[in-house]
Length: 122
Image 1 (tube, rainbow, N blue to C red):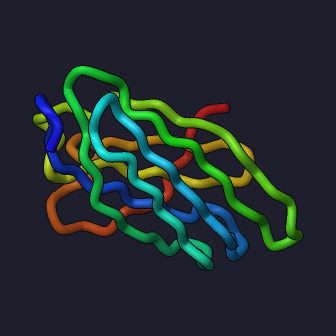
Image 2 (cartoon, rainbow, N blue to C red):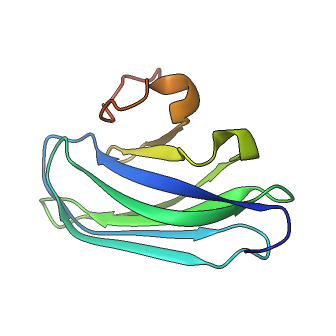
């Protein structure tokens, strides 16, 4: 692992009412190894999990792309600060079609519970 790095888990959660395809998450953080996370198909309300390495010296960044049921391609970026106290739980990326959110499970859910979609103010 890179200096000042810590392990984490990213959970990608489909918060739409349709199956998403070709979901791609490309995570980077300073000198930590880049992680590419691809899910061929993700049904509504379902999630997929991938381990990653975060670093204390830089912001975590993700490039995200996905395809909707109508075959429209969506792309964008998300940034967050994953701290050592967050490890090893990780973060939840809630996918809506045109808005994505990062939820830190340390504050968002109790131990052992499943990730859930939550409403966010526009």
